[in-house]
Structure formats: C-alpha cells, structure tokens
Length: 142
Figure 1 (cartoon, rainbow, N blue to C red):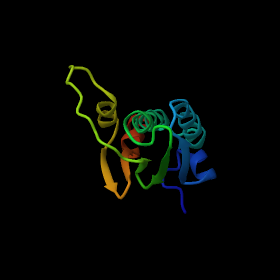
Figure 2 (cartoon, rainbow, N blue to C red):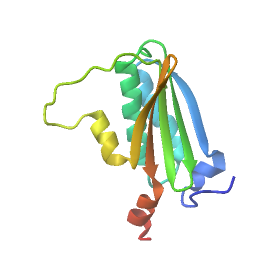
Figure 3 (cartoon, one colour):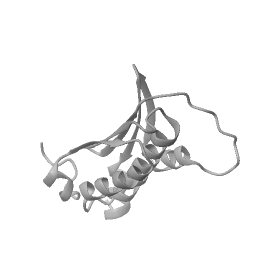
C-alpha cells in the first residue's frame, strides 16, 4: 500500500494497521497507550489518537462486559484519516448525571471528525476517526 500520509513515516514503515487484544483490566489501558504511541511514531496526530484509544479502552474496562475478560483495539491509517476502534463484550449503557463538565466521550467528540457505536451479536464496537488533513493544516501550514 502506498503511504496515505507521508509525514507519518514510522507508521507505514511498520504497517498501516494495528490490532491487539488486551485483558479487561485498568492496568491494560496504559499498555494500549504505549503500544499505539510506538506504532504511531512521528505522526503529528499521535497525541489525539492515543488519548481517544485510552478513553475507549477505559470505557471497555469500566462500562462493559469486557471487565475481567478481553477487549480489542484496532487502528488503521486511511487516506486522510486514522480510524480507531475498541471492540468490547457489550453490556448496558447507563445514562450519567449531567454535571456540566466534559467526560470521556465528550473529549472523543472534540478530537474527532466523527465517531459512533456499532453493535452486533455479543460485541459492541466504538469507533472514531481523526481527520489527518486537519492536522496537516495545523502542523504544516497547508
């Protein structure tokens, strides 16, 4: 595959896709961050992608049936964006009290071009898309 974003040379030198499955424990969220940081290398959008993946991983561990089981993180460099996914074992979503301050998915909303939730069978996948063209304009003045 040709490099969809030449400024992220470290990504393409390894792979344009990342997939790993983690044990559903809070300690694994740090491992998600470290592995994605290494995979993203010099990509200017790395901080945002790592923060989003951290939030999605935390939600899987805290708010799904993946707690004590497993969850999977996927990321892929596509033309113009990086897509991040967290697949967990589903479960009920509880509405939280509005307290006037941002929470995890509010942060995801602020950092992404879009995000969503897909369910099927026994799993739920929360995905987010970081627009690289926005980063190119901010980082490189294009």
